[in-house]
Amino acid sequence: MPRWFVSTRVHSVGGPVGPVEILDTDRPAGYQGDPEPDLLAAIRGHEIFFVTHGFEVNQMQGINNLSYWINNLQIGNAVPIGMLWPGDCILPIFVDYIAEGREAIQSGRLFADFLNTKFTGAASLCFASHSLGARVVLQTIAGLSADVTVRRVLLMAGAIDNDCLTGEYSAAAKKIGEISILASTKDDVLALAFPLGNPLQGIIDRGHPYYHAALGREGPTQPCQGLCVHPNWQIPTTFGYGHHDYLPGEKLLADFPGSVDIPIDGQSPPIGTPQELDDPKQWKPAWSAAFASTRYK
Image (cartoon, rainbow, N blue to C red; front, side, top):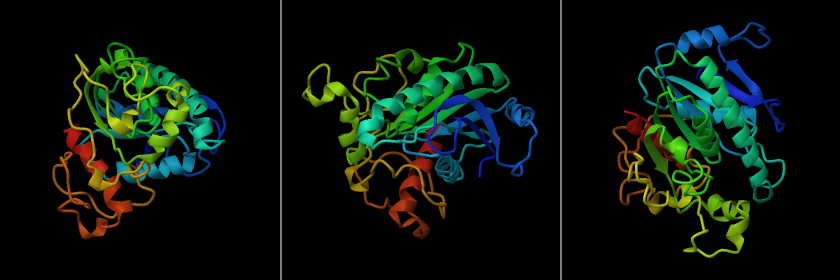
């Protein structure tokens, strides 16, 4: 399990956004000491790799899902840190989607202020996100000081408009050295829930200038001038990637081997998948972790 998490949660389940707190998983339960000095010492001079979850995730689920995935990353000496925020859906997803976006924005602003104040000793920052976590990450980057280096960002199954990099978060995108995206047309959550979270989509047809699909289903709108966006983002339909396939719900039994990129089309599971990863609940999140590691290098 990664040692460090930063959180805007007030409660472990549901609840509002609160001030950023540091969680140190190496400390025994009930320990009252301040973890901040140890965290600042750990990040000094290092690159930081932040990973965050999406909506419908409580604190324990967030810690577990992010930990299992982070444990399969190959990121050298970078310090991995999980970002927790109150994305729990109190109402069904298709009703509460807009409300949860507010929590994502508020959390991103608080994370930005926290990093501007506390992470001046870090060499650079990288981010990976799942689902509505894309908004948390982009909002965070939007609020970072000009002297903060954001080297790489990976947005997986982004539950956000697919013009966000050239529209709402264009200024944030220009701060990023390299942007990678993972999108899947087999993502039924984004096919059904995302249009209902955007009030105009129910009455605007595909192809209309005001129509925006989800970034995590169809990838970004084109072109993305001036941005270093990797050109491959669409996962083959044969992989059958659904919305919840990117982060693991259980410990991954093996690493996905070799250098991983998106094939034009491919066998499912991919050629070279270790026997321990034959189960889609194993190979899919292991593949996304390997993809993140490849794009990190």
